[in-house]
Length: 390
Image (cartoon, rainbow, N blue to C red):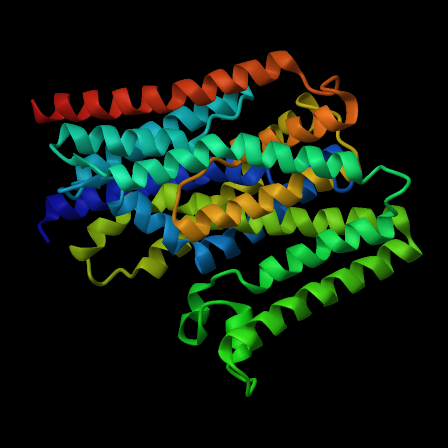
């Protein structure tokens, strides 16, 4: 590589780390434990500490899917040059930094996706219509699916005719089954999931063994949570809530790291000495540091200003958030954790208080920020590359 190319690549790597730091301080670092903080289940600073570690783990073990989609799946016919990558990351990080400083959660997925497409079009790339349809479907359906599931759960959990030593363990069982089927890069040689890996050691049909192990995970999770809730209802609910927050934080790292390091992936062909895993590790470190240093402000904003959250409502918020996040990771679709969490908070709020616990003003500003961030990022990306080409 020429010295100029090396310097540009180093600049892109620094921009990527900055982007990862901003993500850790914003969407990835703030939203996963915000409902638990709102329910007084965990202090703000401890939540920021845990979400950093869990986000790092998710980035390293599950971050490849979204990273590849962001790096090469949004624009066809071209590969972003190093300068284009720098422009993308600076635009995304800059808009996110504005969101953190003002206390409003700018949608990271919208800004990065918009800037990548804008830069790609300015360089003569073609639209990836199939991927756009997939992304648009996830973005549009998230508020309705997440909010709808949260509304349903928040409507059921407080009911006297649905005992919590039954309803909460059922939720834990469903979550356990999903966890058994999460795909991890380090399990690729044995099927990619915990259930598939375990099935290789059982002398049964592969599909039947995988299903049995999945149900086993669910049964164990349900039994443990039922025992815990039965002996200490308040403590059991709090511990289940924290477990859900941990899973969402892990999923946040897996999804959001792609927004920071994905644009670097196509450049690795020019630097074969650097592996994708090394890039994911760097992104994970950036998210971890961002969570530890800047997440508390956004955690407080989401947990206290959007709605008043109790343990049951927080559980209703985190269950659909975890399911949607892992669906996006499986599909390789960049998704905004702010959109996921806030939609679920609003859905549970309407179930509990008919919307009285939701701040319309704050919600209105947030929706406006979501709607405008994609268009602004696209315009900045497109215009910046045109100017640089001139």
